[in-house]
Amino acid sequence: MTHRTGNLLTDRPELYEARFPDPLRLAGRWAEDLLRRYGAGPEVLDLGCGTGRDAARLQAAGRRVTAADLSGTMLAHAREHHPGPTYVQADLSRFDLGHCVFDAVVCLDSSLLYCHTNEQLDGFLRSCRRALAPGGLLVAEMRNGAYFLGRDEPPAAPAVSRFTRHGTTYRSTTVLRLDRAAQLLRRTRVWTADDSSPPVEEHSAWRLLLPQELRHFLTVHGFDVLALYDGPGPRTEPAWHPGAEPGSAADGDRLHLIARKSGTKPAVTAGKPSTETAAVTPGKPSTEPAVTAAGHPAPRATGDQS
Image 1 (cartoon, rainbow, N blue to C red):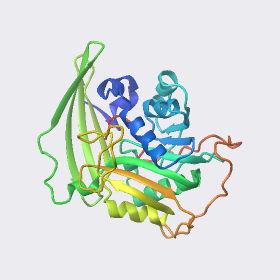
Image 2 (cartoon, rainbow, N blue to C red):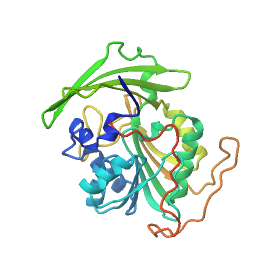
Image 3 (cartoon, rainbow, N blue to C red):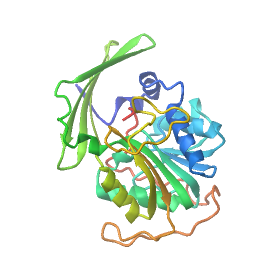
Image 4 (cartoon, rainbow, N blue to C red):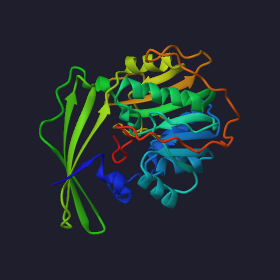
């Protein structure tokens, strides 16, 4: 068997869009609704943009979008099939976009949870604060770690799904397990196809954050939490629709975050004081290299609406 770390769909963006069709661009519309609701300016950074569908939806709504992902293959697909945003390569756990400053950072489909360690989460929030203008928003959507409190383990029986593209049927068999010590939801997935290609086994994981834990990280990094709730959202059932009001509970399997960069200087994090850089004009292009990509061991592994 061929072994692969990450996700097959990251290497085949066209398969990602076939496996997860989104003709209504629900996640992008949900994010735009929140940006309008909370009065965000036009400059938006989409972190973990994947194939670029949501970034392009935000651009079409009148935003000026910079979209970042670690996968060069995903970015190439996005530039060709979803033009409009400026696409750059970056590791979300410690990105640096030079002197560009944004009115909002958007991070969808559990991208934030590829920060597996506290240090990586610190790096993500420190980078977001540096990239945001004063009063800028952080909007994120992810799995909810609290959903697993007091509930049974994920099903022992593998989950099986299929989809067909251009006459080839792809079949995935997926097993999830909780790694409580590491606070991770680990996934093993095997892909097979009826085109005689060899099976592919993949291993990936998401950090499981509790709502109060996430609040603490945000406060320490100089953010005010405006809303933290389980639904409705683009991946909930029932799904978000225009006009839907944010909920107040945080017990469901998804977690939706809206936070604002505060004027308070961040507290000490990871044993070291945080350093801030001076704010500059939003959207001003940098004279530095566009992105510093880190190649972290836990990258944005695009490829499922997790």
